[in-house]
Image (cartoon, rainbow, N blue to C red; front, side):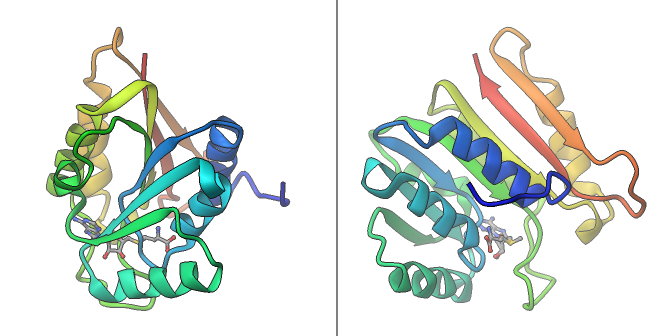
Length: 190
Ligand SMILES: C[S@@+](CC[C@H](N)C(=O)[O-])C[C@H]1O[C@@H](n2cnc3c(N)ncnc32)[C@H](O)[C@@H]1O
């Protein structure tokens, strides 16, 4: 495994995912926010032929960037979808979902006005939860500054209210950084 920094939330979330899924077979994983494809590439390379990644983004440019990255790495265990992640169940019809990853905010080096928002993100989380396998997980990397914390606040309100019998809900955050550093939330089905 490559060296990682726990303080880098994408490193940390990849570390958690790798430890939980690297030796598993037939994993169905949703990358809810493909962006430039770094997370999708990480997931495809983790599963190789033992798992499949459905990657969503509302921006055609993002999906094109992701496709280029994956093509140059010769992976084929994925489907790239230009649509909102809240429509996930229209694309994953008869399968249960092992896990999903949200990397919230806007596409780096692009129009900052096109970004995730709490209404569609929470709808997507609910839809994925309705198809989540036992012990399935939803990982959320939440950046606080792209909208003054609005999206993170509503997501936290929603996931904190989930039944403690049915789900474990986890929040990971840096305690000694200023300017609202990003946080990780995990919803794990019991
Ligand atoms: C922070 S970027 C994702 C970074 C990406 N995972 C990577 O590894 O490069 C957030 C992405 O979410 C996308 N997005 C915003 N709203 C969305 C929605 N409703 N459904 C799917 N993607 C959305 C944006 O277009 C943007 O590309």
